[in-house]
Length: 637
Image 1 (tube, one colour):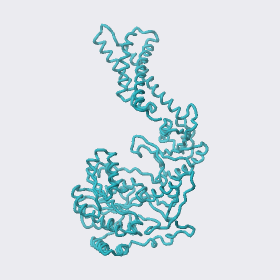
Image 2 (cartoon, rainbow, N blue to C red):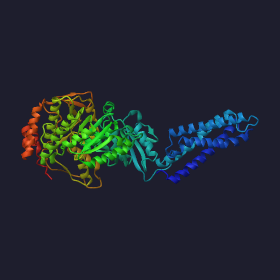
Image 3 (tube, rainbow, N blue to C red):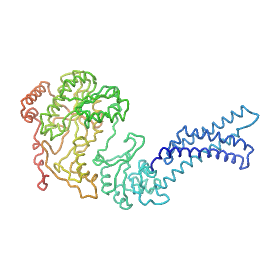
Image 4 (cartoon, one colour):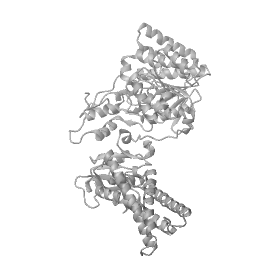
């Protein structure tokens, strides 16, 4: 049911006001009848004089309290509070005005009646107005839930979880919030809920039997409503998806950042058990509030999420520095819609490259950042294999430029976003990021003006160029899904989760740390592709196939988070660790940069130059061995 249009809404409000005024008069008549034991009262004349006053004051009180702005079919405890408060004000003011008239004109009692009548009238009016509102809701819900009759065309819903979240979903369904849907059964594991009901919906035991219940009850839709899961829900989600029903998740208020929860579609993060963990950001907020922050690569996947979260901490100034004006413009519009005028006074966009030292100097001199988060980088592995000189210019010299600029302009803290591909790198992108880490480590030892630190983590779900959006597009197009190798594994985390951990690391950094984020368990990409096919494919079409294409240049079967000589230690943050960085002197860095420059100037073999400078830069075959080849029974696309 949709909200009434403006004209119908005004008519409804007028009718409700007339009804409430009539109920106020009726409650006064009944109160007099009850008080005088159903005999005609001697004060009948006062009744007729008090009625218009009571009706006017009561309706005015209800209007002032917003009762007529509430949707009748969503009448709730708040509605009852408004009714009680408005009735108390209306009856109280009527009595006080009657008492005032009687005090002024004692010769003739025009309005005042015995005090018990006002109390009885108040109670009667609360009951009658409350009954009028909730009767509308009950009748509406009866229609939605099939209380009087079974709806023939409604989708049959199973709610997994019979706690407060499940109860909220059932209430919303019965109120018609999710359209033509009928809640049939709820499933839970708690023994104390056996043989119970939630708003007439039976609760059955065993979430491991969802497939059986879906068949038994003829279920069309499933909503998983477990607001505070203690364990990984991915096996349960997979069981639900296997029923071929539409599967959705209930997002609790704390997950949605809103006053009420809602239902959302299942996503790949749910299937991988990487649903976002909501971290305590209290200390992070204190660190960033009132600071001037500059984010390079602020329009990218990680950079933009960093900006979203930093803006929520109310910095003195947030500067987004990026070569892509389109991404920055889109982010600016999004932040303006979310934060309004605060963005106009706080956010600045600066178009520029980290390769351009003059532009960097000009921006730094203008905004005087206190914190720099360096997220700008070329990250696409195959593309950097074809253009190694661009990886060096952007990832190595770009990092050096921003870092040196930070020292010159007395930035207090510099945080670089690194990658797990920098560990024993087998590709140009990873090698260039390892060189960038070395620059940061050496600069920390060289000077004491700026605190330099780096944060290393793996893949993020849904980032630009990642396999998740690629697989989804292939599945929705009917396939096939192209995968490089059946044994390849990767670490994954969600973009908001990664950004939150980066900001936590930034807040506790003291300079010289190489932070490593806890990425959880590695994911086999083949299994992820199979789960995505299960989630996104159309069951009415032929099955989506997986085709293997062979490892790409520079790609290895698995990623690592630590090098052999790097021992990690825990920090004050549960999921952030510190690796022992390599002790590199600045003279070694100068020699490395000089050789890279000469190779760029002479258009030499950049890959060979990187191999010579970085002994940990291996060829993929040295890491993958025979596993880098496809099995005999698998043909490349």
